[in-house]
Image (cartoon, rainbow, N blue to C red; front, side):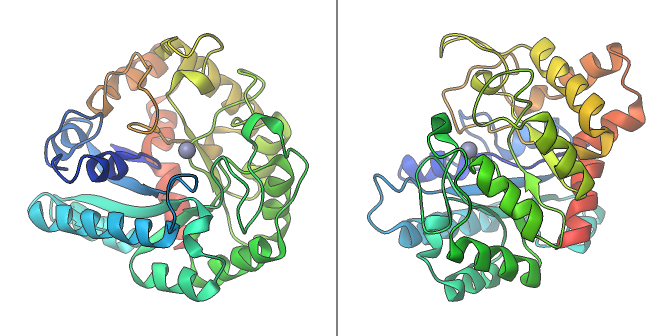
Length: 314
Ligand SMILES: [Zn+2]
């Protein structure tokens, strides 16, 4: 079984003028492939590019509409989930769960009222930043703003997300912002699609100190399978399953098994991984098994830890 904490499939469906469907498409994630992956829940990000979108909130709402339309069209196989109980109910009905996140806090347009409205529309996870500074804080893009923390509005957002029961996602956030979230959040938080910086020097990955702190707070980090974050090299370098195992072994040593999860980032970058699409995720489980991970540990990485955090926070 599998819970993937991050993909950009909805953006790719939206970009194509709605011609691509969620049921079956040429991307790395669709319902057919999720079924093959034995997925129980997929978090679908609504990613907004601040540089190209004049109105980030409207852009986000447009993608939200596409998301719900696609669920309607496939309601015999997939259903919305906003909680642990929803996931359990959908499983009992033999349906995949679809959860909603926003990747780019600028979609809130600097207003807690908008945050609450997105919650009411079903959003349960927000990746506070992407690669540009926004109303909430600073990105870690190329370490440009490494030590900058959250803004006043960023801190208010963390408090309100705690109160509502939403998952705070620190992937893309500056190191300073990470430590602010760790200090301020009274609930577990997550890094939905980030790897180990000790294994691969990249600003998007977490240091050992961060991994330990994230584990202490009861959160998880989702393994990102794209090559930039797994192996150094040219943009065309293909990440191997061996790279993934290398990161996962290190993360287990540093933060323990409870901090580990999956956040593929499929359909978010130019695809450069040995895993062709989500249906092949079983190959990673096999490799982990060969590398001495027990079935219990593999289950924790693949879905049980993510499910624990969803139950704790939402
Ligand atoms: Zn991302």
